Image (cartoon, rainbow, N blue to C red; front, side):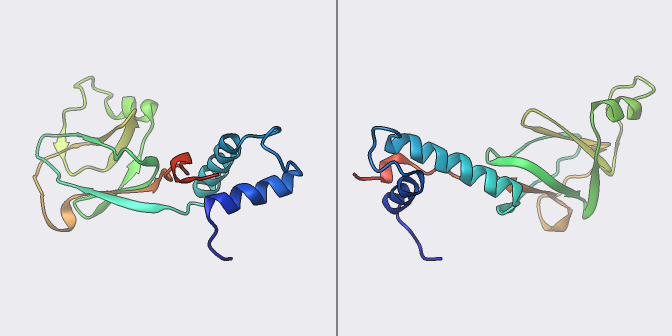
Length: 151
């Protein structure tokens, strides 16, 4: 498939909709539909896998997710894969009520909002090499912008 400009894509969508004029759908509306389709296709097809590498800090269990992270695929720390646990499972891990303050080699992670939490909390700092925190995730695709479009 050949590369198309945004103008060509809008024109092709208009042709497919049998809506040759902007009276039925404006160019902006068509570009919005193209964005929805692009994001859905990218997410469901797992097309934009990428990774983020962060320093692991002794005593720090919470790490900020990249702003373009739409779904975590896997997490590795100290060179080992961590398993995802949900809130209920995390409560089981905290069964003695001590608060999630145990330090050691992280084996699990959970996510709340834009924060990835490791448990146990790391007991060693690593800023280089394979022992750092590796977050493999699906990247949110960039929007198709109207500013690149000329009529």
